Structures are given as structure tokens and as C-alpha cells.
Image (cartoon, rainbow, N blue to C red; front, side):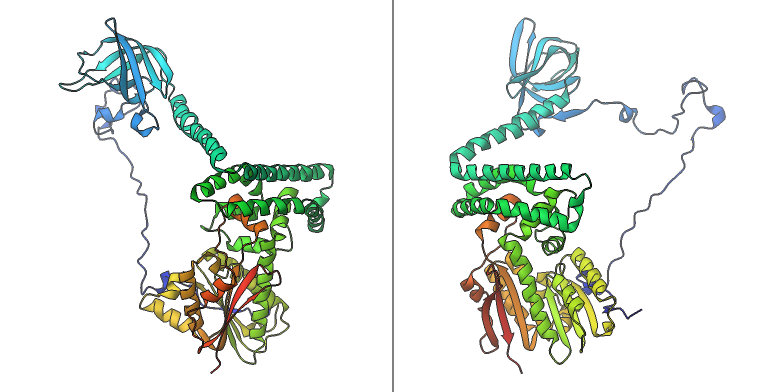
Length: 544
């Protein structure tokens, strides 16, 4: 068996930079047998339910603690107030405030002090919530108001209050549904009619796509559509048919959306996601973008799916959505920017000496898998440093890299190092072992590249980060930072359909990103990938 790539003894993380780790607290469940405190021969069977009855001699504490009390909830915890009215001694009292409710009673407050004794009969008591009578019947007073207080409790006679219905009316019907109806009015007032019509048209287009693909599945008795080549071919045929219309709709939507104010943007996101999200999130890529299971969009699994040669999903519609994303303008740029990183890594490995490569926010590092799998032989040692704040990304990344290197006969030339680091730890490492680790590992690097991190960094932080990374380069080293451009046929779907927001930059903004890199230390230029939708800050440190 060939030698395996030599990993560092352990991942070096922020927790491992501490001198010592406090031992984890361990919770132990102590089980103790309960024994009767009354000798068996002194127990009176009649006292405890007969000779075959249950013995409760072990129970301690107030007997009141063991009484059953019906569910009760406070009205102040609801969205709307409740009022009550009733007849007493031939006089009607209305507008009493309801304090709390149970299935069999309620607490009330009157506006004035009342002379009520326990047992006083109340006739035709009505509980009104949000203008609707939810209970009516007779009741009796169970406790009366104290001096100078007007609060009292009543017990209901007859059928009790349906608490679930009260909650349903309060939380769903009156609160959620009412707010939804108000939003409908806001949609009409603040969102352009043509914009709303285009969103609806896009929604109905996706419905028809799904129906078409479901019909194909139903007609395919042998499920040949599941074969990777067949599903790719079917998705390609359908995409070619509908892409022009989808592209037109999304471009028109984006053109209007860029001029929305804050209120319109918020309403637009609600309107679009109510229609589109259920359809879009059928596929894993789009679902992860929207739900953000790793805490952010654009995670390692999404990037892996975006570059996969096979479509995933248990239905043709799921696979079509992945195909659609991959073939959108920014989907193509995701693949092409990985090719740019791969080319840079190949050029670095071709140097006639040992080299060190750092992938910042590495994600799945598909380009490094290809570097290892496609390079015939490494003539000199290559150290690959994988840095990401997502531990799952690092685990997936190193597993796939090891798999790519498994059957090589020059694995002694390859070493991997995983750093579970945040950006803060790179820019301002804490004194001690954390700073020592950064100074030792993140220095004299021949190639540093990042393909997605800067899509999320505001300009001041991006400038500071670019400067810090440049200082980590060895003489003659190269810094390559990718950043996507705004493309109407993709960005609108990402923002309004999936709530996936990036910071897009143009050529001048990319130049400004490298403004803190001194010209006497190296050169800075901006290039693009073959799609023109991803720009690269390409900085090279002077040699020697």
C-alpha cells in the first residue's frame, strides 16, 4: 500500500491555541433507591387504599403540590386583550378585563370595587376576544376581591373554554393572518404591479417545469431518468427551452429591484419568497442557500454541488434546479474561478523547489482535489494549508484530498495542514500560542488564494485582509482573491428567491481593495475569469 499523505498530528484550532483546556463538565445521573420510611408492620392498609392499594408513605412536602390544576395562561402573553361581561342581580356589567383563563374558569378585573361573595351567581357571562364571543354561559364567584381591589375569580358552569380555539384565533387567525392581509395591501401600495406580475410569472413557470418533469418520471416505467447521463440530458433539453424566458424575467426584475428603498426591499423579499422559495428549495443547493445549515450561505457542500459532474436529487425537478444553478451566469463563474485557482496552483507547483499553498476559506477545495488527481508526479515537496472557520468543511475537504492521493506513489511529497481559524484570528491573533501558530504557519507562503470569502467582506475589512495576506507571502509569492460581479440573471434569484446576499465588486472596487499594498513591495492588477463574471485581485510580491 502506498504511503498516505502526512497530515499534521492534529487540527490546529482556536481552542488548541490555549495553553490548557478546562476539563469538560460531566453530568452524572445518581440513582437512589427509595425505601419506605414506615415499617411494614406499622402500615394501616385502610389508610393507603386497602391491602392491595398504593403506598404513598414516601411522599413529602405540601400536599397542595400534588393537587391537579387545570392549564391556565395569562392574557398578557397573547397578542390581543380579552373582555368579559355578565348579569348580576338584574344588572349588566360590561368591559371587565380578563386577566387569565383556564378551561373551567377565569380571573377578572372590574373598573370599580364590587361587593362579591364566593358563591355569587353570574348569569350570561360572555368571554370576548378580538371582537368575537368565544364562550357564553353561567358562572359562580370562587374568590372575591380584597379591600380596595377589584380582581376576582369565577368558575364556569357547563362546558368549559376551548383554550386551543382561543390560541388559534389569537395567534394564527387574528395575528398571523391579519398581518398577512395587511402585507397584501402593502404589496399593492409599494411594489410595482409589473414587478409583482413578473414574480408571479416566474412562479408559474417553475410550476409548469415541475409538472413537465413529473410527467416524464410517470411515463418512464424503468426509471431511466435516474441514470446520470439521462437526467443531465433531460434537464439540458428543458433548460434550453425555458432559459430565454427565465433570463428575461429575472433581468427585468433585477433592473427594477436595484432602485428599491428599504421598505420596498423588505416587502419584495417577502413577496418573492412566499411564491418562489417552496419551489426553489426542493433541491439541496438552493435549500442550503436559504436555510443556511452551516450558519451562512455558500457553504462547502453548496460549492461542491455547484461543481459536481452529476446532478443530485430524488426527482427530476430537484436535479433540474441544480442544473439551472450550475448553468446560470454566476453558477458558471463558480466553476471558472475554481479553474483559475487550479491554474495558479499548477504554476506554483511547477517551481523548481518545495512550495507552500494556502487556501483561505477553503470550502470543498475541489481545485486542489484536481491538482492532486491530475498532476502526474510532484518533483518537490508541496505543503497544502487548508484554513476555514467551518470544521465540517475542513473534515470533508481533507477526506476528499486523502482519497484523491490514495493511490499515488509520491505521497511522501504531499502534506496537508488544517487550520480551524476565523478571520479575526488571522488579522489579530491573541498573544501566546495563537500568535505563535500564526507567525510560524502563516508565513513564507508561495500562493495564497481565496475564491469566495471576499464576497462577504465590506471594503475596509477587505482592504485590511488583503494587506495582511500579502505580508504572509514569501519573496516572489502570489496573492489571488476572487470576487463575483453582479449579473442580473443570477443575482435577483439569489437575493429575492434564496435570501443569499453577496458584496459584488467592479474593476475599480477591486483595485481599491488592494490600495493598502505598497507599490514598492509588489505589483497589483485585476483580471477576470473566462465568463467575465468573477474578478481577481492578483498581487505578486517582489522577489528577493
